[in-house]
Amino acid sequence: MSKVVRFHEHGGPEQLRIDEIEVGDPGPEEVRIRVEAIGLNRSEAMFRAGAYLQAPHFPSLIGYEGVGIVEALGAKVQGFAVGDRICVMPNYRLGEYGLYGEHAIVPARSLIAPPPGLTVVEAASVWMQYFTALAIYEVAHAAVGDAVLIRAASSSVGLAAIQLANWAGAVPIATTRTGAKMAALKAHGAKHVIATDESNLVTEVQRITGGKGVRIVFDPVGGPDIDALAQATAEEGIIIIYGGLSGRPTPYPHWPAALKGLSLRGWVASSIWNKPERFAHNRDLILYGLAEGRLKPVIAKTFPLEEIVEAHRYLESNQQLGKIVVTV
Image (cartoon, helix red, strand yellow):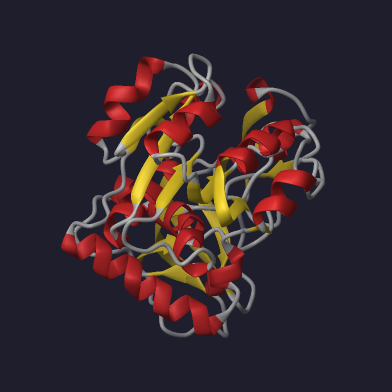
């Protein structure tokens, strides 16, 4: 028997229960791992709360990014051996498998060797944040001198975007709600920080950019603020929306978009890892960036598995700067 976190109905963090269940043996194209660390993602909180794209089958497993040791191999699995330490990339549907637990079955297609030189906790945090933030390269082609507006910049993806923007020679402009995280965001590479509850976003962007606006907006929030983002964007700029944290519809900002010739683009990390021709190149780019110190995962806080409810409460508190990791 193994301790596995599941939720039996939608709701708050308290719905997460540690159940004792038999994990079983892997299928032909699966492996069973002993879980060491789990990287938390906001999508998991939305999934638990009933606000995600896919509906779970109760009781539902949860969690899809982390590090573990291979315990058993399916009959068709090649390239891995019992005892290997591996990262699990979050490239399957939430609830289809689940990493929140002492042991887990995962698809072999999701396994990748941990990046050299990282701790287990750091390795559990890497793939979702950097593959998501790579939209500023893959879609927007960030280049020297480009102003990049990064919303929710204190998240792991936001910090990854700051690092990638700096690597490209662009100018990362971070947003945060209040001034509490401004110094920390600058310490982590933001050239400018805008506290949106304390100042006007459009006015500040125009001041920072000398009236030009930003060429790239990288936004996980969506919702009615899209009109202000469009006003802050430069002519022929691009707005990339990769999340829906506002929980509200995102209207099309017709006149700012029309008058400036803006592009609005959706994005998910699977745009890279589900396309082999993109995956290998960007995996190697991330590994190179980590090895050269251009990229460095930032860990906000760790929790033991027994405190998974508190970990989710912290995840939803917006207090963190970087990735939350649960250790097993």
